[in-house]
Image 1 (cartoon, rainbow, N blue to C red):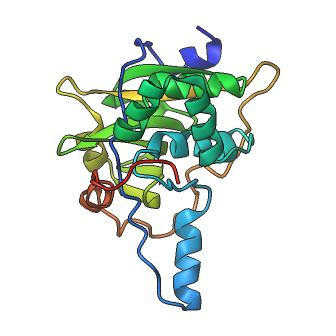
Image 2 (spheres, rainbow, N blue to C red):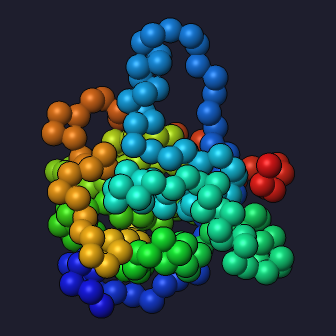
Length: 232
């Protein structure tokens, strides 16, 4: 285990977690300069998911592009993955979403090491860089990017909703298991590189009010749909 990954505490084996098929739920906005400004704040530094099943790819694209300054889009990652796997596995991905192992393989394609960890709630505030987290609500799985925890708030760059700030207890309800531990997926820069001192995924010093979206709304928007899950 590398030193950078060791800082994220005790490691666990990669789990076969998957993002459920999800609806990005982007309702058309009314044309006004204020709405456009709010949308820009909401989406700044986030790769939004385009497909029902692609929250994992969008979360990884967000982390690579805006965290590690290694630009890649969601579609490129999906294409790379589908070229690596069998037709049967392609069907599984398009039906159930990407697994942590899929995300690890994609990170490796871009010459980054990646690993899944299970950590206790008490360690969340000690994370010093963004990670992908696996959350669930009402049985629906979802990948999102945890920018960080400050005090009693969790900051997310979410593929479905954009930038979200929510009460920590709501995040913990979605993230932690019965033992008070949850999954984080850390990506380490390729050899010879380091995490930037600052990035678009930093928790802002002067936060704007992005807490209108609650945990309940997050999963109303990101609940599985029954539509066509194929790549279009």
